[in-house]
Length: 474
Ligand code: HEC
Ligand code: HEC
Ligand code: HEC
Ligand code: HEC
Image 1 (cartoon, rainbow, N blue to C red):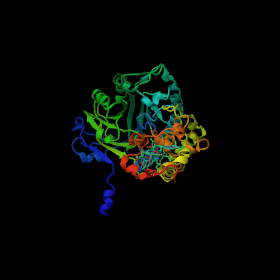
Image 2 (cartoon, protein in one colour):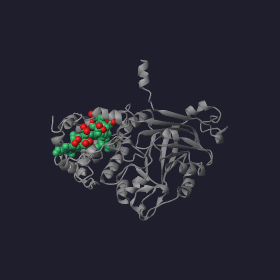
Image 3 (cartoon, rainbow, N blue to C red):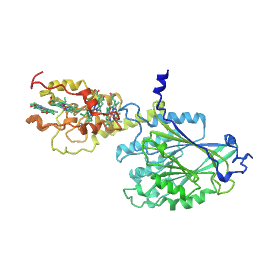
Image 4 (cartoon, helix red, strand yellow):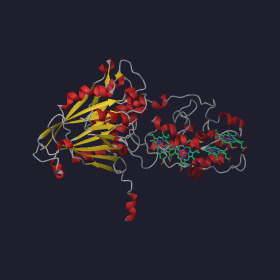
């Protein structure tokens, strides 16, 4: 029993509870006639608003499954959201921006899929991040028209925005008890993150852009939230400038978002982390404002939930992801992968050629996981996904490497040349100075994301070739 306990250790739900009494409220009577500032127990009867936030998926729709214990994925996310909704109907779901990772057709299909998933989960708003912008105004415009989620940006302006259906903010109404609370949601992207200028589009200084919007919203809303697609320091600056913001959801942080939660004067700053591994959940107990200077949030609990094996994949999203894979196949994206000549100017020949002379090594290799790495993708129904295939075959990004299983069956799997390099020359010369392999070769594929436990000695031991005693033997 005790041993079982030690297996649960990474119950990575890190709960940060900040209970605080808003100074401005001390001694005041709240909406319900309670003396709010003095008796924390009374907070229990106050309406609570739940804000659930994600962002910076950076193109990660799901964990690849390359190693155990990977976090994240939209399918797990929906399961969590459904669980949260069972407890509280009124979740406000917010997306911080940067659904895609890179650019290109696959990324477009991905972004459509991601937005559809957010739609299924009933997100309220998607803030535009710099990677979203990189997809191009035309495509973003198309998405902003078809998506049932509001695209927001408080600091993107210019003629080009005519093609975009974006709003500077949205106001979401939440009915709790007998009161309607209005939550104003704004969003910015830091100009510092914009690398590619877009014609007729300007990304303004957030502090300047927010000023008129906030003064407009402050009287009309009970709670103000900013989705801040910026470095933490910039979000802190915004918090210092605008104490009327109750909450800033900030970005550009890696792995452990909970480490970056902080409070700047009246404003909480929470971060989302990258690749959709975590979901942030904030509960804010409220009372209506007495005056427009009031900070009306009363107590706040921030929770960072790791999307681990505890959450099953939701079937709705699993189906969406299935359609995504089908689209990659239908559009033959594997055939459109960018290819170049190998820097050595040599070409790949495939495992069968090597087997002619290195038969015992070949036979041994056939028994390793490397030989069936392509079949692994077939079993996972990802064999048409260029992002997966790249590491599970020989030379996808080179002209002489893998194309399709029909055209280049000898290039399937992590083959001899995945490690030794193209062998067109060696095949003829049999030169001994071919094919030096070092740990760096392994780490091209065995990187921390896909193979977090990789350790050269240990891994090589598992697959190492038999010594070749005599040539042509075996
Ligand atoms: C950067 C290279 C890389 C990419 C990209 C990649 N993989 Fe992998 N994959 C690996 C490596 C390396 C392993 C072995 C990890 C280990 O054992 O430490 C692996 C293992 C796997 C396994 C487990 C095999 C087993 O026998 O347990 C599956 C399943 C898998 N990958 C599927 C995928 C899918 C699906 C994708 C695309 C979404 C993908 N991979 C993309 C490198 C990659
Ligand atoms: C026509 C026969 C032949 C073919 C085909 C061939 N090799 Fe070789 N290979 C040799 C011979 C002979 C040597 C030198 C062995 C020696 O002298 O130790 C060698 C050496 C090597 C070495 C270096 C070993 C060392 O440290 O000296 C590697 C690595 C290697 N081959 C890999 C491959 C790979 C990968 C392929 C397929 C692309 C391949 N070979 C195809 C015959 C061949
Ligand atoms: C081209 C990408 C690639 C390179 C290079 C690569 N691997 Fe792998 N490796 C994989 C993939 C993909 C898998 C998962 C195979 C599967 O089961 O589908 C894997 C699996 C493994 C495994 C588990 C397989 C088994 O049979 O137990 C070991 C061990 C391993 N790799 C060691 C290494 C070492 C050591 C190197 C460098 C000398 C290396 N790999 C280079 C992609 C690569
Ligand atoms: C996962 C990466 C990897 C793959 C795949 C791989 N090798 Fe190697 N190979 C190595 C490494 C690393 C060494 C150096 C071994 C050492 O340091 O003892 C090596 C050594 C060799 C040698 C020299 C062995 C000796 O006895 O001196 C030959 C020949 C060779 N490989 C051929 C092949 C052939 C043929 C294949 C495909 C059937 C293949 N290798 C697949 C990583 C790989």
